[in-house]
Length: 289
Image (cartoon, rainbow, N blue to C red; front, side, top):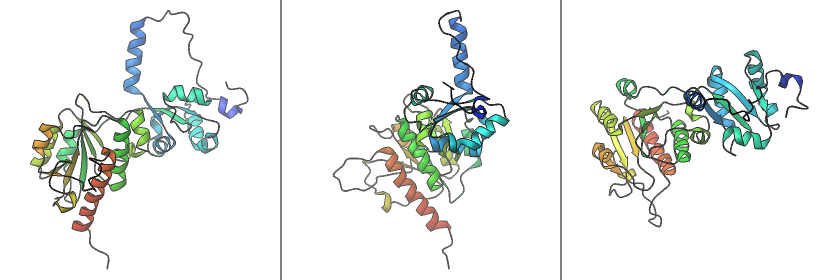
C-alpha cells in the first residue's frame, strides 16, 4: 500500500492491522475495547470539518488518513503529526471509504478525541444576554439536518444548539459533523435528557421560548420576538411534541405561497435564525452615522 511514498510520509505510518484468522481474541475483551474506543475516539471526515479541528484543537488529533490529491494541502498537518509522533497514512479511495464509513469524506479523515459536551445546567445558569439567541431541537432525526442546522447557528451567531436526547433525537455523529462544515468547533452543542425541563429553566431566567409550528396562525414576521430568545424546531414530520409546546411563549410559522405544506427543518432553521439575527441588530445595535 505504501510503495512509492516518500520517506517523510512513511515515517509515522500506522501499524498493520492484526490478523483476524486466528480467532484467539476473547469476544468479551474485543467488545469492551470497541466500547471504550467509541467513548474516546470520534471519526471526523470532510475537508472543512478536518481543517477546522486542526485550526482549533490540533492536540486532540489521534490519526490522519488522506488521499493522494489532498496530500499537498495537508503539509502542515503532516508536519504536526511528525513532530508529535502521530500516525498518518495515505490511502486509496476504497480504503478511505472504509475508514470513514462513508463516501463523502472529500479525501480527508481524522480520528480525534471527542468534544466533551458542555454542561447544559451551567450554560443556563450563565444565561443569555439581552441581545442573544439560541436554537433547540425537539426529536430531529436526520443527521444531515442536524449538521446543516449547526452550520446555520454558527453563521448567524447563535449562542448554542440545545438538543433534547429523547428516543428519536439524533445526537451529533460523523455525518452531522461533516455537514456542519467545522461549526461543531465554533458553538456549544448542549445535550439534555429533558428538553421541556431545560426550556422551563430558561423561561425562569427571562428567556423567551418560541416554537416553529406550520399550523400556527401567527406569522414569523408579524410576531414580536423578544430577546433573549430560544427558538425550538420539532420533528421533521410530527413537529413539536406536546410537552415542548406547553413551554413555548409563542408559536410562529414561516409564511409561504401555500403550494407546499412545509419546509425542510434545516431550511426553516436558517430562516428563523436570520430573523432572530435581524431582531438583535435592529433592537440593540447602534445604527451607523
